[in-house]
Amino acid sequence: MSTSDHGTIATNDEDVVVLYRGGRLPSWDQLDSSQQLEFQQQHVDLMLDVAREHRLRDMDGYRLIAPRGAWERFWAIAFPDLDGAEAWMTAEVAPPYGRYGHYEYDLARRWRPDSLSWLPTRTMDASEKDPRSVPDLSVDTGSIVVLCFSRWQRGSDEVAPDVRGDDRRRRRLQEVAQEHGLMHGEVFRLVGSGRDGDLVWVLEFPDLAGAEAWINAEVEPPGGAYHERTYNLARRWAPGYFASWCSTR
Image 1 (tube, helix red, strand yellow):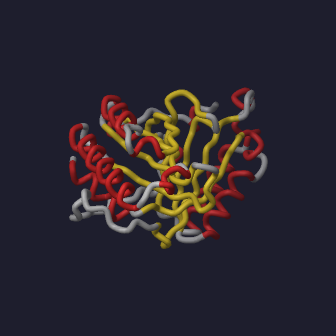
Image 2 (cartoon, rainbow, N blue to C red; image 1 turned 90 degrees about the horizontal axis):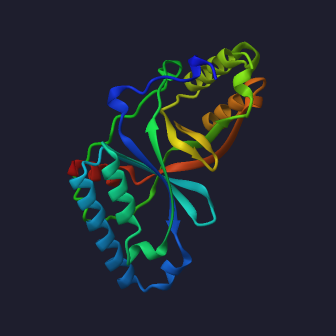
Protein backbone atom coordinates (compact mmCIF):
# COMPACT_ATOMS: atom_id res chain seq x y z
CA MET A 1 0.00 0.00 0.00
CA SER A 2 1.17 3.52 -0.65
CA THR A 3 2.45 5.49 2.27
CA SER A 4 -0.27 8.05 1.60
CA ASP A 5 -2.85 5.49 2.70
CA HIS A 6 -1.12 4.76 6.00
CA GLY A 7 -0.02 7.01 8.80
CA THR A 8 1.35 7.03 12.31
CA ILE A 9 -1.31 7.12 14.99
CA ALA A 10 -1.00 10.35 16.95
CA THR A 11 -0.03 10.13 20.60
CA ASN A 12 -3.47 11.38 21.70
CA ASP A 13 -5.09 8.52 19.75
CA GLU A 14 -3.36 5.68 21.55
CA ASP A 15 -6.53 4.56 23.32
CA VAL A 16 -7.43 0.90 23.08
CA VAL A 17 -10.87 0.73 21.47
CA VAL A 18 -13.28 -2.16 21.92
CA LEU A 19 -15.39 -2.62 18.81
CA TYR A 20 -18.38 -4.67 19.84
CA ARG A 21 -21.11 -6.28 17.75
CA GLY A 22 -23.88 -7.29 20.10
CA GLY A 23 -27.51 -7.93 20.73
CA ARG A 24 -29.90 -9.80 22.96
CA LEU A 25 -30.70 -13.45 22.44
CA PRO A 26 -34.32 -14.65 22.14
CA SER A 27 -33.99 -16.16 25.63
CA TRP A 28 -34.05 -12.62 27.04
CA ASP A 29 -37.69 -12.24 26.04
CA GLN A 30 -38.56 -15.38 27.97
CA LEU A 31 -37.77 -13.60 31.24
CA ASP A 32 -40.52 -11.71 32.99
CA SER A 33 -40.23 -7.92 33.19
CA SER A 34 -39.11 -7.88 36.83
CA GLN A 35 -36.20 -10.22 36.08
CA GLN A 36 -35.23 -8.16 33.07
CA LEU A 37 -35.13 -4.97 35.14
CA GLU A 38 -33.18 -6.68 37.94
CA PHE A 39 -30.57 -8.18 35.60
CA GLN A 40 -30.29 -4.96 33.60
CA GLN A 41 -29.65 -2.85 36.72
CA GLN A 42 -27.01 -5.28 37.99
CA HIS A 43 -25.34 -5.11 34.59
CA VAL A 44 -25.42 -1.31 34.42
CA ASP A 45 -23.98 -0.98 37.93
CA LEU A 46 -21.17 -3.43 37.10
CA MET A 47 -20.28 -1.75 33.81
CA LEU A 48 -20.29 1.71 35.37
CA ASP A 49 -17.91 0.47 38.06
CA VAL A 50 -15.56 -0.72 35.30
CA ALA A 51 -15.96 2.58 33.47
CA ARG A 52 -14.98 4.56 36.55
CA GLU A 53 -12.13 2.31 37.66
CA HIS A 54 -10.53 2.10 34.22
CA ARG A 55 -11.27 5.67 33.07
CA LEU A 56 -13.63 5.10 30.19
CA ARG A 57 -12.68 7.72 27.55
CA ASP A 58 -15.75 7.65 25.35
CA MET A 59 -18.47 5.33 24.12
CA ASP A 60 -20.57 5.55 20.98
CA GLY A 61 -23.41 3.15 20.28
CA TYR A 62 -25.27 2.48 17.04
CA ARG A 63 -28.33 0.38 16.23
CA LEU A 64 -28.43 -1.31 12.85
CA ILE A 65 -31.42 -0.33 10.73
CA ALA A 66 -31.61 -3.97 9.61
CA PRO A 67 -30.27 -6.37 12.29
CA ARG A 68 -28.18 -9.31 11.12
CA GLY A 69 -29.31 -12.27 13.16
CA ALA A 70 -28.45 -11.67 16.80
CA TRP A 71 -26.28 -8.69 15.87
CA GLU A 72 -28.33 -5.52 16.32
CA ARG A 73 -25.97 -2.94 17.85
CA PHE A 74 -22.41 -1.75 17.27
CA TRP A 75 -20.24 0.00 19.84
CA ALA A 76 -16.91 1.81 19.91
CA ILE A 77 -15.71 1.91 23.52
CA ALA A 78 -12.34 3.54 24.31
CA PHE A 79 -10.01 3.06 27.28
CA PRO A 80 -6.51 4.41 27.88
CA ASP A 81 -5.01 0.92 28.06
CA LEU A 82 -5.58 -2.78 27.47
CA ASP A 83 -6.49 -3.43 31.11
CA GLY A 84 -9.62 -1.33 30.74
CA ALA A 85 -10.66 -3.01 27.49
CA GLU A 86 -10.12 -6.47 28.99
CA ALA A 87 -12.03 -5.62 32.17
CA TRP A 88 -14.92 -4.28 30.11
CA MET A 89 -15.23 -7.38 27.93
CA THR A 90 -14.99 -9.68 30.94
CA ALA A 91 -17.68 -7.79 32.86
CA GLU A 92 -19.99 -7.55 29.88
CA VAL A 93 -20.39 -11.32 29.52
CA ALA A 94 -20.71 -11.93 33.26
CA PRO A 95 -23.94 -13.65 34.41
CA PRO A 96 -26.76 -13.27 34.88
CA TYR A 97 -27.14 -10.59 32.18
CA GLY A 98 -24.32 -11.99 30.08
CA ARG A 99 -26.18 -15.24 29.50
CA TYR A 100 -28.71 -13.46 27.31
CA GLY A 101 -26.42 -11.57 24.94
CA HIS A 102 -24.59 -12.00 21.65
CA TYR A 103 -20.96 -10.84 21.87
CA GLU A 104 -18.34 -10.32 19.15
CA TYR A 105 -15.28 -8.22 19.96
CA ASP A 106 -12.37 -6.67 18.08
CA LEU A 107 -9.63 -4.50 19.54
CA ALA A 108 -8.59 -1.47 17.54
CA ARG A 109 -6.83 1.88 17.52
CA ARG A 110 -8.12 5.09 16.02
CA TRP A 111 -6.53 5.65 12.60
CA ARG A 112 -6.22 9.11 11.10
CA PRO A 113 -3.45 9.46 8.49
CA ASP A 114 -2.80 12.81 6.85
CA SER A 115 -4.87 11.71 3.85
CA LEU A 116 -7.96 11.61 6.11
CA SER A 117 -7.26 14.74 8.15
CA TRP A 118 -10.32 16.38 6.56
CA LEU A 119 -12.78 14.02 8.23
CA PRO A 120 -14.93 16.03 10.69
CA THR A 121 -15.01 14.93 14.31
CA ARG A 122 -17.92 15.10 16.71
CA THR A 123 -17.69 16.85 20.04
CA MET A 124 -18.71 14.50 22.82
CA ASP A 125 -22.21 15.17 24.08
CA ALA A 126 -22.30 16.72 27.53
CA SER A 127 -24.66 15.15 30.04
CA GLU A 128 -25.58 15.72 33.65
CA LYS A 129 -27.81 12.65 33.83
CA ASP A 130 -27.35 9.89 36.39
CA PRO A 131 -26.18 6.92 34.30
CA ARG A 132 -27.41 4.43 36.91
CA SER A 133 -30.98 5.46 36.15
CA VAL A 134 -31.75 3.94 32.76
CA PRO A 135 -34.40 5.82 30.75
CA ASP A 136 -36.38 4.49 27.81
CA LEU A 137 -33.69 4.16 25.14
CA SER A 138 -34.21 4.99 21.48
CA VAL A 139 -32.28 5.89 18.34
CA ASP A 140 -31.43 9.40 17.23
CA THR A 141 -33.38 9.84 13.98
CA GLY A 142 -31.57 13.09 13.16
CA SER A 143 -28.80 11.35 11.22
CA ILE A 144 -27.86 8.12 9.50
CA VAL A 145 -24.57 6.27 9.96
CA VAL A 146 -22.59 4.16 7.51
CA LEU A 147 -20.62 1.36 9.19
CA CYS A 148 -18.07 0.08 6.68
CA PHE A 149 -15.72 -2.86 7.26
CA SER A 150 -12.95 -2.92 4.67
CA ARG A 151 -9.67 -4.44 3.57
CA TRP A 152 -7.42 -4.21 0.52
CA GLN A 153 -7.68 -6.91 -2.11
CA ARG A 154 -4.69 -9.24 -2.09
CA GLY A 155 -1.98 -8.00 -4.40
CA SER A 156 -3.26 -4.42 -4.50
CA ASP A 157 -0.04 -3.24 -2.83
CA GLU A 158 1.76 -4.23 -6.02
CA VAL A 159 -0.37 -1.87 -8.11
CA ALA A 160 0.82 1.72 -8.52
CA PRO A 161 -1.32 4.30 -6.63
CA ASP A 162 -2.11 6.20 -9.84
CA VAL A 163 -3.37 3.00 -11.46
CA ARG A 164 -5.47 2.21 -8.39
CA GLY A 165 -6.89 5.72 -8.55
CA ASP A 166 -6.04 6.61 -4.94
CA ASP A 167 -6.04 10.38 -5.43
CA ARG A 168 -9.21 10.31 -7.51
CA ARG A 169 -10.97 8.28 -4.83
CA ARG A 170 -9.93 10.65 -2.04
CA ARG A 171 -11.04 13.71 -4.01
CA ARG A 172 -14.40 12.11 -4.76
CA LEU A 173 -14.98 11.21 -1.11
CA GLN A 174 -14.13 14.76 -0.02
CA GLU A 175 -16.59 16.10 -2.57
CA VAL A 176 -19.32 13.83 -1.22
CA ALA A 177 -18.50 14.81 2.36
CA GLN A 178 -18.79 18.50 1.53
CA GLU A 179 -21.84 18.22 -0.70
CA HIS A 180 -23.82 16.05 1.70
CA GLY A 181 -22.69 17.59 4.99
CA LEU A 182 -20.71 14.73 6.55
CA MET A 183 -21.21 15.28 10.27
CA HIS A 184 -18.66 12.86 11.70
CA GLY A 185 -16.03 10.54 10.28
CA GLU A 186 -13.86 8.11 12.18
CA VAL A 187 -11.70 5.16 11.19
CA PHE A 188 -10.49 2.34 13.42
CA ARG A 189 -7.62 0.05 12.56
CA LEU A 190 -8.03 -3.42 14.04
CA VAL A 191 -5.29 -5.05 16.07
CA GLY A 192 -4.86 -7.92 13.63
CA SER A 193 -7.59 -8.55 11.10
CA GLY A 194 -11.29 -9.20 11.59
CA ARG A 195 -13.70 -11.39 9.70
CA ASP A 196 -14.78 -8.48 7.47
CA GLY A 197 -11.51 -6.60 7.16
CA ASP A 198 -8.91 -4.65 9.10
CA LEU A 199 -10.43 -1.14 8.98
CA VAL A 200 -13.78 0.03 10.33
CA TRP A 201 -15.23 3.31 9.08
CA VAL A 202 -17.98 5.21 10.96
CA LEU A 203 -19.52 7.96 8.81
CA GLU A 204 -22.49 10.04 9.94
CA PHE A 205 -24.63 11.98 7.46
CA PRO A 206 -27.81 14.04 7.92
CA ASP A 207 -29.79 11.75 5.63
CA LEU A 208 -29.81 8.65 3.44
CA ALA A 209 -28.77 10.59 0.33
CA GLY A 210 -25.36 11.30 1.86
CA ALA A 211 -24.85 7.71 2.97
CA GLU A 212 -25.80 6.42 -0.46
CA ALA A 213 -23.52 8.92 -2.25
CA TRP A 214 -20.56 7.91 -0.05
CA ILE A 215 -21.05 4.21 -0.75
CA ASN A 216 -21.36 4.87 -4.49
CA ALA A 217 -18.16 6.93 -4.45
CA GLU A 218 -16.23 4.22 -2.63
CA VAL A 219 -17.14 1.46 -5.06
CA GLU A 220 -16.59 3.66 -8.14
CA PRO A 221 -13.82 2.35 -10.43
CA PRO A 222 -10.92 2.09 -10.54
CA GLY A 223 -10.45 2.41 -6.76
CA GLY A 224 -13.46 0.30 -5.90
CA ALA A 225 -11.88 -2.74 -7.53
CA TYR A 226 -9.01 -2.87 -5.05
CA HIS A 227 -11.00 -3.09 -1.81
CA GLU A 228 -13.37 -5.50 -0.14
CA ARG A 229 -16.13 -3.78 1.80
CA THR A 230 -19.16 -4.68 3.89
CA TYR A 231 -21.69 -1.93 4.59
CA ASN A 232 -24.32 -1.56 7.28
CA LEU A 233 -26.64 1.38 7.90
CA ALA A 234 -27.37 2.41 11.46
CA ARG A 235 -28.64 5.14 13.76
CA ARG A 236 -26.91 6.52 16.83
CA TRP A 237 -28.18 4.70 19.92
CA ALA A 238 -29.32 6.88 22.85
CA PRO A 239 -26.32 9.25 22.58
CA GLY A 240 -27.54 11.57 25.33
CA TYR A 241 -27.75 8.78 27.87
CA PHE A 242 -24.47 7.07 27.05
CA ALA A 243 -22.62 10.39 27.17
CA SER A 244 -23.38 10.34 30.89
CA TRP A 245 -21.29 7.16 31.24
CA CYS A 246 -18.16 9.08 30.34
CA SER A 247 -18.79 11.59 33.12
CA THR A 248 -17.68 8.80 35.51
CA ARG A 249 -14.08 9.29 34.32
